Amino acid sequence: MPDAERRFYMVHEAWTAQPNADAEIRGAAYNENGACCGEFSVRWREAGGTFMPCAEMYADAWRLFADWPGLGDLLAGIGLGANRLNPPTPADVRLAMLRAGFRDATERAQPEGATSKRTAADACRAVAADIRAAFPDLMREDSRQTDWVAELEMAAGAATA
Image (cartoon, rainbow, N blue to C red):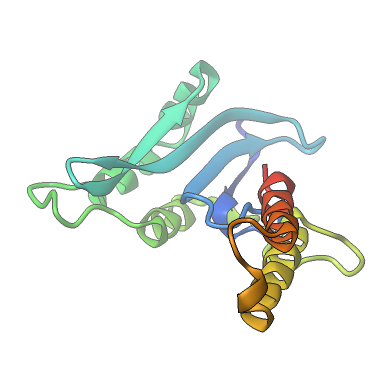
């Protein structure tokens, strides 16, 4: 896709992101019809006591590195080198992708009227926390109120699943 637009999304920063989402950046080339080719992602995973970026890509993404040789050089430039204690951050990878000609297409602001799982979950957690704070004497192991608050907290978890 030589004329394709290169875009990436900071998945964990999008308004649709799950609460406490792990850092993840997804990139691809998109044609004028919105079809993508060469999808890849960078996720941060624990390795050796620190969080390290891990690139994952489908076979059609391998072509990106040949078509856009600067991308591999930029990612290698922010790589670990000899300093394993200071791995690249999501901000480092974002900057490298911008330099390689990718556009940050992350939708960070929630459109008016749209609802997100995060909003529903946060509301459930807030109500549960308010009840626990206002009625500490009622929050015994054996009380029905404790069950009700626990159900609210479970609903918050289900809303983000």
